[in-house]
Amino acid sequence: MSKTQTEKPKKDGQERDFFCVVSDAFRIFARRSSVILGSAWAFAGAVLVILVWLLTGPTFHFSDTWQLIINTATTIITFLMVFLIQNTQNRDAKAVHLKLDELIRAIKDARNELVDLEDLSDEELKKLEEQFRRMRTRAEDDETSPSRDAEPVESAERTR
Image (cartoon, rainbow, N blue to C red; front, side, top):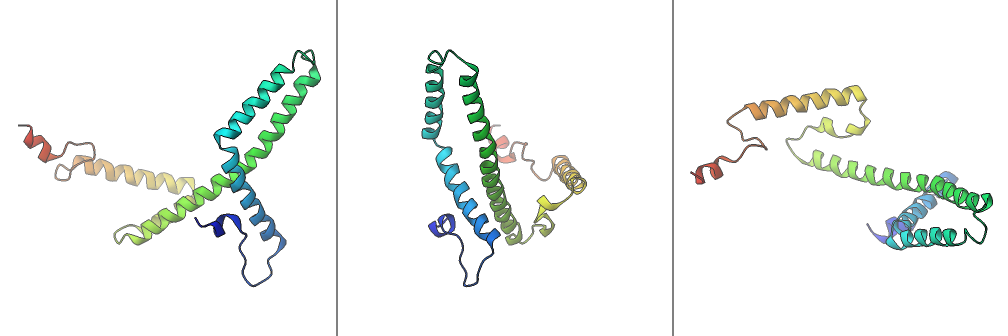
């Protein structure tokens, strides 16, 4: 992904509404945050904060306030991280879906109905899953076409 796509909000000659500006700013912030907060250094920093908190316990006589500080801090951080993680996961999932859709569309014999599968209802997905299960069973029962679990004929003949 180019630097333009990840760091700069999109600009096209026309005025953008406030929602788009906020959305782009959050996208950039979430992407940068996920890179930083998903690093080993961030984990080491979190462990350091916990160790400092533990070491200050005797100084504050393990008081309720001492415990409340870590509980409140971790609750707030967790609450905010949920939104950052969900945003990056949604974007990554959407990108993967678009790439798969493009592959399906590009393959001549592929069924184009499989594009945008994520928009199907649970019932439609179950029907499709059953259809693939039947296809797999037919392929396994068909002795003329090798199954993915079956040993290739050539290697079986070489071992004799």
